[in-house]
Length: 272
Image (cartoon, rainbow, N blue to C red; front, side):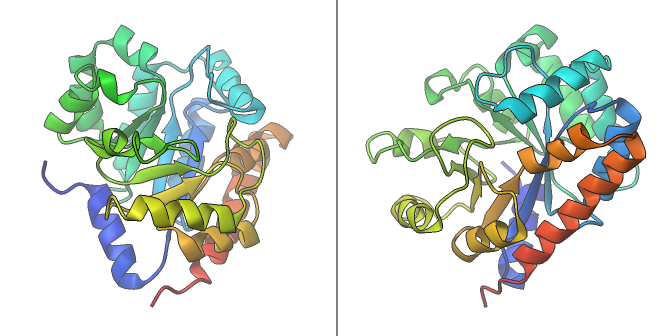
């Protein structure tokens, strides 16, 4: 497939000598307009790649914070169609920041795979992370996505051994998402020494950028991951800002303030 925004961003960051700051927020949380304001503000706050969650009623891999974000989004009327509209509106003012949709297969299947890929590509989607589609099901969505020019990003975990790893890497593109802990999102803080050991093993099998997520909450934790990985992913800590806010404006300000602090932590680490 041809070069994507994700490819270009990681290439530029490598030349710059720093890790990527990858943010996760839920589409439509707490409502469409507020989510759009947050997403528009994230690049200014230092986000290099934005993951946008597609709310789903049975988010089995997500911890309580992201589950609640999904429920708030569903309660506000968010659908897959409105999620694509959110991205389309974002692209009206930002043609550079990579956007990755993250979620589960059922809403995409119900929407129609061909329709989803066509409309997603037109809206400005650059990549997909679909947590419940194993490599054995690549013909369902992975291969059609690659054909459409959309990166298919896979998760690998501490339990992905050397026998399984080649299958995980086979059709992965854009970057590899390393889940730093066993469990759901936001469950615990990653241990950098353990992550470094795992990344060393994975890098023997691929030269693809590796972003590390699950459990990163503070600038210091983000900086520690930036030392050893090609990207640090933060989600639960950001969506909790929305849950704890008293007003939508407070939610926007809190998310962007934390994102700015996390970005500063990552940018403090030079890989040159």
